[in-house]
Image (cartoon, rainbow, N blue to C red):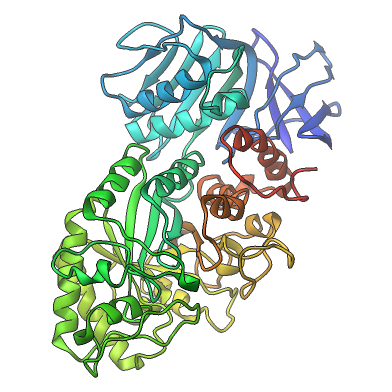
Length: 549
C-alpha cells in the first residue's frame, strides 16, 4: 500500500510503504531508493495511525492518517492541527442541515456554544457549489487555521460532516459534557460515492420497534454514509402501518409478533416523523409492504382478501411461503390501490417496495400478472416499484428496482433473475444473504440470528464485490447495496445493534468507497478505530476477534 505524506512547506510528498501492522495503526518505513508514485495516484485510508521514518532529504513529520469508514476516495495527512475551543464558530448558510447536525453533536460533548454564523473563520461548511464532484461529493481540509467542508449540495456537506466526526476524539460522540482538548489533525480529503444507493433495511414486522428505536437505527447508519432506509412494514406476523381506508390492518393485523410477543404499529403521523428524521440526515425512506405472499397479517384482518372469504388465524411462527393474497379477486387490487395511494402520499422518496419474494402459494403465471398489474398502480401514484429479485419475472420499467438477495454467485441456480434483469437494462440493488444479511450468525454459537444462508463474520461481510458477484452483472448494472436485518430472533435495540455492528459499516464501505481501495487489512484497522466511538454512544456491538484484538 502506498501512502502520500505531506512533509512541509515545499509541499513535497514522501513515498512510504507499509511494513507492518501494529495495534490499530500501521508502522510505515521509508521506501527504497528510487521508489515512485504514478502520476495521479491517490492515497487511501491506511488505518488508525501512520508514522513516517527518515527520508533521503531529512526527517519527515510524524503524521496520522485517520481511520475513516468508509475510506475516502483520496485522503492525505498534512502538517498542523485545529483545536475546537469555546470561541469556535460554525460558519454556514442559514438553516444549513449539516451545520445544525454538527452543532448539536458537538455542543453536547464539548459544552461549547458553537454558534452558527454567516461569515468568518472556524468550522466552515460551504455547500454553495464549485467542486465539480459527483453527487454527494465533498472536500474536507483541516489546517491550523480552521476546518473547511466544501460541497455542491447540502447532501455532500452532510457526508463531509460524518467524516469530520470520525476525525474528532471518540468522546465527541458522548451525549454529556466531556473534558477536552478537541483537536483535529491536519488532513486533505476528497470524496464521493461509488454507488448512488447505499441502504439499510429494518424488519419491524417480525418484531415491532418504536419510533425512537427506528430513529436511532437510522442515525447510526447515517454515520457511515447510508442514504436509503428500507422499512419492512408488512409480513405474515404483523402489519405495522396505519392505512386509514382499511383500519383493521393495523388494529388487528398489528397485534401480533413472532413468538406471541407484543405487536404494534405506526400511525401515519409517526411514520411521517420517521421520514422527516431521516430527511434531516439525507436518508430516504423506502416503505415495504410485501405482496402477494408474506401477507397473513392482512389476511387475518380482512376475510374478503382470501379466495375462500374466510379470515386467517394470526400467525406468530417463522415459516414462509404459505400465504397469498387472492390474485384473481378485484378487491385485492382495490385494496392495494388504497394502500399504495396512502403510502405514496406520505413518502417523499422515489420508491415503494412491494416485496414479491417467496410467493410459493401463488402460481407463477398468476404471480406475473399480479406484479404487472400492481406495478401500474405504483406508477400511477408517481413512484417506482422496488422489490426482491422475484419481481424481475414481470416486465419492469427502467426505473424499477429488483433487489438480489439469494446466497448464490457466478451462474449458480438462483442467479437467473438477477442476470436476466441486467440483460433487460435494469439496475439492481445487491444484498446477498450470505454476505449482507445482518441477521446471519457471526459464529455457530452466536445467541441471536440464523444460519440458513451462511455464518457471516465481519471478514465475510466485507469480502465481496457487488460488480463481480454474479456473472453478467457488472458495475453499470448495479444501483447499489443494502444491508437487511430480519428480526425473527431480535426483540430489543441491543439485539439490533449487536447484529448490525460491526457488519453494517462493512456493507456501507462496499457501497461508498472505490473498488480499488477494497482491502481487508486496511478495513480491519480502520474498523477497529470505530469501537471506542460505538462505546461512547452506548452501542452494544459484537467484539469480533477478527477486528478487536
